[in-house]
View 1 (cartoon, rainbow, N blue to C red):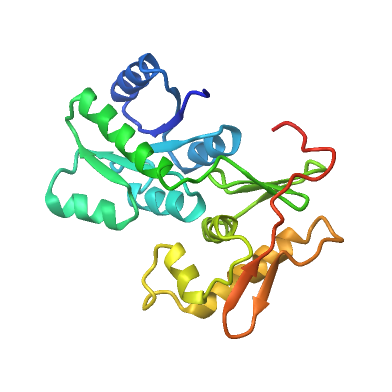
View 2: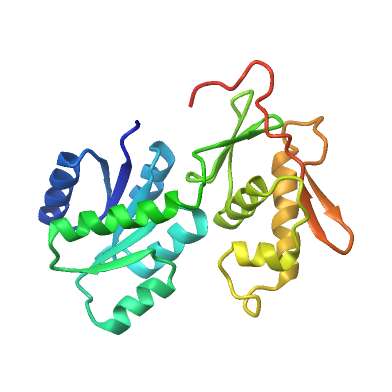
Length: 239
């Protein structure tokens, strides 16, 4: 089984070294970042399974990075922070974090929380990839790869909707259901915004040309995704 890959966003060298050593000893592959630029590079170059984020970063607003991760990926996120008050934890969780642990913490508790977050995400039944038409979709990286090697990056919202479609093929999906898939309150997200996201998805999925429309509009019911989840002849190039 492939070892799990964890990205740590932390500027304190001593804490980062301690975490990297501990998690490496536990069998994880560990990467590090300290700001938005290095975070983007790590997400682009590595197959990350989970992010540990320190909110107290001198170069970046940790809350901004938290929002960036949740808006642009579907990765599980655990906040590690010296901010330990209840209000701080509530803010972190409301930003979309899957869990929150305050410094100082016991490394065994950190490992237990990592395992719990990963287990909850694995229990959703989300596979590492979906293949349909001329595309291979990697939901954890929010990326599409074509049979010809074309790489298309999706926004977090696009990836979440495409994942929802892949999990419910050939089923009419109402706008309200798709709003819920974005983990937003229906009062906060205009259901019509779903139309714009799907329009962008359609354009990206049509980049290979000559394909039937994968996402169809069903009058009065919403949208239906008809992927015929099979790899095309010839397979895909290696990642």
